[in-house]
Length: 398
Image (cartoon, rainbow, N blue to C red; front, side):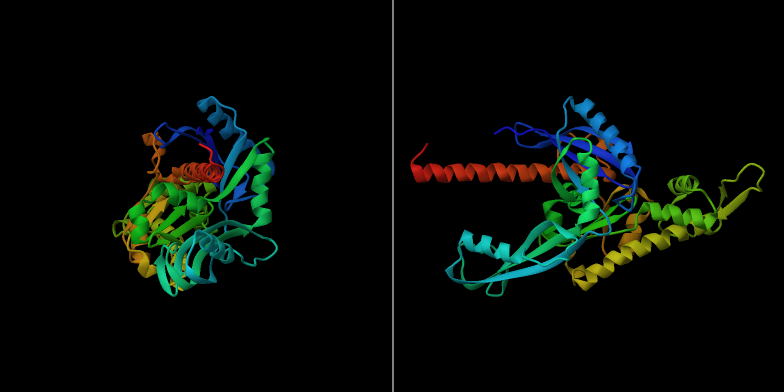
């Protein structure tokens, strides 16, 4: 069964990107085109200026359409924002004897029945593990027992804020096929099955937000977003050294470091000065301290959330950083210090067609959004084939 090209949109605080993916004959997914534009109209992963965001998306969309030689009608949208939260929930049902597929479907429905505030909407409901009579981590179908339980993670966000991005997309005459949490997308493309099995924490360091996904025993155990990102580091630098945002960003890119070094205490950096102003300098260690404090706070907020869920000891695979913020010097070293776990920089790895330009950590979310959409499409096709097979068996067809 053939499949139409899959198009994913990532409207971030720093960049707006459109990714086009197509299935090869062997079933592997290939990224065939990307549109990329500096973002405007977004703050902390959320819309604050409709027209600016719309113009940026249109530019990125046209780039992707030209590169792929197609007209896009439908997109999958990756979104973030501090309003996105993860909530664990458990559903239980009584069973009598052998557990069937219908029992499994039933307990999953029960686990997904949660009461949220009226302004919240579910993005994903992800099954973690099943338990039979208190025995956890089982594949229940075919087992015998008296009580079947399912643990799920409900990822939800504020409806109005998510709908604002949908309005931007639909304003360009595009249909929204699905909304996807950016953290899940990044994890989909950057993490291996082995890392998920060992237990791993993915942190996606964006411009306005930081998303995270925690896996334990190959299952998603927690997810969420924090309204702090690389732009906050830039703002801290601007305030500390009385610089414009553009000057502070340039200083961060050239000399930024998440750790305070001994050498930095003796080295001085020239600071931008307006015409006629007395030239200024600052110690490198002062710049490093400003960055270190904000990054340490960001990692610390995630660590505290995982501690409350009692998950830290399950992360044997360590920490993986994605997003543009992963380029910050010694960000991984600081993460190792905060979490007490090994840390590495990750990027897209689970698709083909990636050039060197698309293998960096900043592309994990967009590539992962295409991958999520592709896997969902494959699942729907398989379910459709399964239905036809059952119909054939019932009516003696084929």
